[in-house]
Length: 325
Image (cartoon, rainbow, N blue to C red; front, side):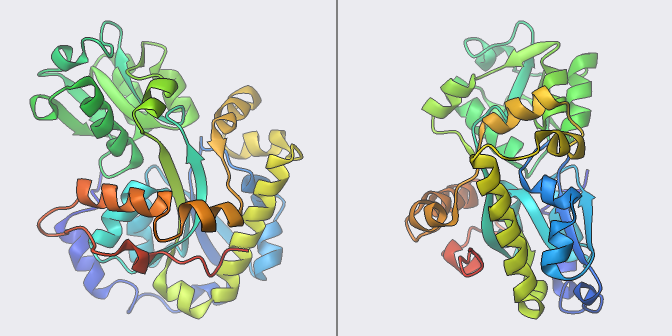
């Protein structure tokens, strides 16, 4: 799988969005999203509420990882990435990608992103049992962050493992076939499949107690923000209306489940572990200067920084609340 930090990535940045295709948003808006990651606004996606609010047709494309979303944004194929993981966003802006964070999509515990090990490997023995073993991790994603944090908790040495870059679906399949000893992944079906042959190294409660949590965001290319601020605001507003509907128990869960390519029970269980904060909470608790989101950006920025792509001194420059309702 392509990696978010690469020579190709750097080359794309030189030319990327400043010389990309002409403003396609005049005719349509291109939005990236994930399957197996159910969110309230998928009801509005299906019912064309976004098309109506933004005044143009909306094209939705599903991706396997947040890193792939960024590459599509850099190539000019995607305008808005919805529910992109905070880790791939951090990797992108560390590498000077011309994108900006405009909204928080989902706040979630490790029920949505976790590391599943084969039978016989658990929290108590992972430090020794994983030595020399192959593990599947979609690098540069929230699952990569969870991998690093989980290994920190169980005191396992990552340098002694053979880490293989695999997207969640492939990682899950590799665990089931016995090709890897552990897979770190996200997505309802992938996690469910992985757990047929093993169990999560940390429970949701254990991960929460260790401060491991996830935040997915909405990112937009600087080009699209500059040329279509009204469309960005409309997208965020419709999404927040969908969140409010879900939080009040009025969402059509059957529509959401079908669009997420999941069954109804799995969708309800997954979304039950998600939080969809309102705009006021985001401004006061998450996106203010000392908020939770800003703290996570700093921590992850340092965690995934490289000599070629160092952490930003101020992540506030790549975050804006001006499009929130």
